[in-house]
Length: 153
Length: 115
Image (tube, rainbow over all chains, first blue to last red; front, side, top):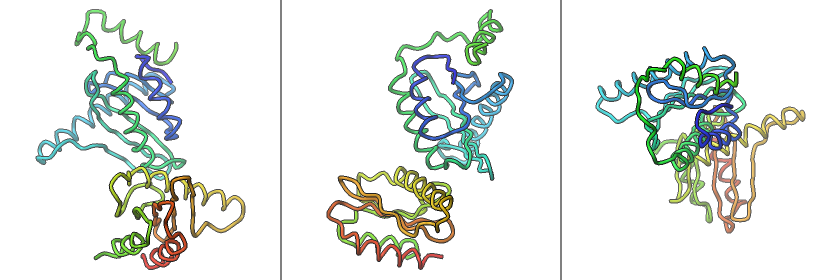
């Protein structure tokens, strides 16, 4: 498991242990990766983050058009592998969790422990805001550094 | 009243039963529930479904039939589960003073009536 911020590690580790999820990706709503577990290649993480953020944006817009509040979670059930995508608020802004799980667990367990992880993340998050620099000059270098941290290379 | 609600009503009428749920075993999600305040139905459903599935696998690997009734006893009460057809499981949360024999009879009868 790799995380950009150390306070994310403990809640995420507990979630992985309790839920038996195969893969998890935590990201911001703009698709910036915060932590990941189970992904082998950085390109997979970046693709999954971009797609996950886009799907959440689409479902939130769909909910707005339908006149309702946001959807709590989106679950794609598969025969051997399923996927859950859920957005949640943190003191650091709105984040998205993408979880892939197999038949060794269930959507009920994943949702239960995901909600517990969100509570733990919210209480563990430092209250001061991270500096808001949408696209710094050294963006490419920062991205490269973040990916190295996430994959240990 | 639906079959599911009728089954839950029968179980919750047993003295000492604090609530009952009909859950999906494979998903661990609540199908119907009738619970006292303070019981997290979602958590009970997810964990009871996991327990029933694991017991099912364990007995299967041991060459035995799947369990027809599960009784998980704790210091402050019990969780009872009766697997039925169509992936459904009838679950009851019982206090320490519950009439567990009556609960078992009612649950097995109720789950047998569910399609």
